[in-house]
Image 1 (tube, chains in turn green, purple):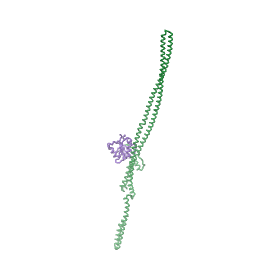
Image 2 (spheres, rainbow over the protein chains, first blue to last red):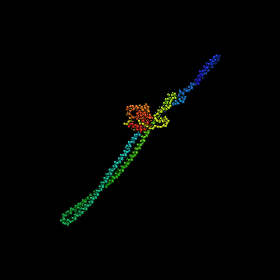
Image 3 (spheres, rainbow over the protein chains, first blue to last red):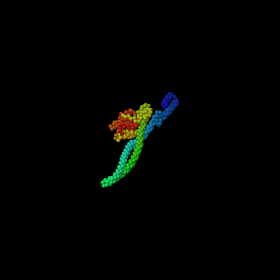
Image 4 (spheres, chains in turn cyan, orange):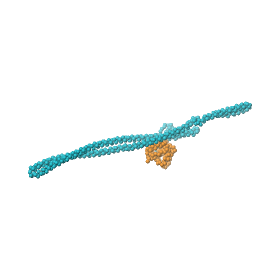
Length: 384
Length: 122
């Protein structure tokens, strides 16, 4: 349109001059009129061309103003580029914030968890000490103590058995003294008969007169001996009865003592059994509690191991975010630096392949390929 | 006195959980945030084992591994690579540079301890 106006503006004076030349043989008045008409036509053409330029400038201004103001682009590609240029730094900022916040939070969390695990380990070590002092060792000590106490009771029983044998011997003594009493009674009987015999001998000696005088002395002596024997036998019987009474008293005292000992031993045995049973119950409870503590400690250990695995998610998330940041930064740099022709020749597949090469985790490759979001199995260990 | 393990990782939380795992088993630990930091921590410390990440700023794990193998004082120090990288090509790169084991994150504490225990005793 502008070209058309400019062409016409350039052609109009030529057209007017041609008219002047054509009417060169006209009269002066006619020539003046024609010249005036030509000048008017030229002025009109100039005004028309100026109007056209003004319109074009206005149109160009309309096109250029958005560029100057930076608010919009006439084409969709330009708008998209502008959108990315404006949005990408915001996204980068958000990703950076999320990464920093996540890292700080998980670092703090793992620090606190470290302290918690230390305390749990301390508690577990105390449990182990309790296990040593309150578990099987104590059971063994109590069993040994029970055996030693039983041995002591057995020693008491042996002593009691000795005392019983002594009582039997004392009862035998009683039998002997009974025999002694009987023998004393026999001696008394013999003494009585001897006395009677001596008396008869004395009567017969008196009847014999002088010839029996010597025999009478013998008979008196025999009689005195029999009386003396009777006295000794009576004394023996008394002594034997005294000894019998003493033995009986000793036997009674020994019997009472033996019965008391028997009761005491039985009572001691019951006490020992009760104490041992109580200790065994307590140790059984301790052992049960120790087992529970060991089970709890083991479960806590497993839980700690699980938390340690889970805490490592931050490292993986951070790597994914860093990759996205790198890609966005590169895209932004391209938006700012690339010309239209460079964009036109951009190999998208190559760009995607470069993205892929930066991945470190198998999950990133799966997601890139549009596959399921599978997680890396923990602790894949290769020894070289 | 326990054996000392140098833990190299740019993630503070990973350094912390590895350290927690090893300390609980009786190992002493020193932490470094990248390869360069790790080399600076070698001076004055007797290191019995190195556990290193692969992708780190300033100096990556494979470069650190090569540096360690080039130094006379750490030539025979066993190195475990602890990384999210599971590609066999990367593993092969680590093996060629002298790594003793390649552990892919996330690690299970007992298995990491078993790997460490195979190379050094606490």
